[in-house]
Length: 373
Ligand code: GLY
Image (tube, rainbow, N blue to C red; front, top):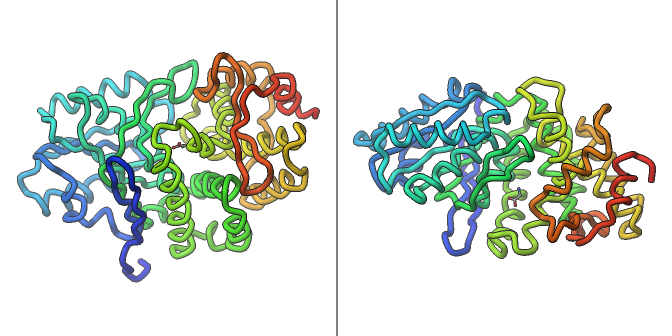
């Protein structure tokens, strides 16, 4: 049964090109609200093979009903991180060319982080930049990747190595889409939600401890609250530091370790045993917290509390077997935060107090990766 319609919550993201994040049930059917962001006549609806069968026709029909003159093209990627490539990007650009998209075109990114990143990058590059509206359908993309304008594709050498900052014109997070989300994906999104507590909000961490059952059961109100709080945190940070010259890097707590794990495993197909992004970030946050303890920056009890919370959410907290510490370290050396060949990591002083630490000693990192501090 659908929850009663309540007005969407709106989180405003300020800055040079402000936009709103709309959070609520049924937003994908609100053609007038979606079409309000289309300046021209061309729309490319970009999605993947998991999400398109569920929502693409609904979104297209809603847009068309609101604006009959729109020419709506569709481009559907195979689901999974393995599609986030230069080849996939090329196909998306070709779809824009075939649509005859002009500079006032709008790309709608309907799906999770892979779709949002690739669609955003295609929008950033087509005719040097057209509009993009993010329609995240996973929790992970609602609380993180759809907000803040980071767009990219992966290379075999590492995640997100080719991309651009390209702010969305709007974000519509339809919480109704979460009802079709597999539990594993919901947990993965909750890892990124926990991240906001870990980096800057101890009270939110406590709330997440108390609301675990409701959140894992997909309670619409609890999820909307978690999404709105996460987006408020992200909005505050990206507004002040859109291009990651400073504090935006804090949003990458656990990500350098996590990306290394993801890259070393090979970007898995959906349903594979390889860790997905949120799971890899969960392990990465535990490793970052352990390293902080080992370096004398933070109490061990905070690392243990974070690990315990993630475990209660059913998230992994250990590096998958078979990944060599040296190989992970080699991957971490290619992280975008590094400067002058030195490891620069997001660590913490404890729960709610993340910080960027330059020039981290590789031997210490290796010890944490080997599980032998
Ligand atoms: N996902 C981290 C950021 O947007 O900066």
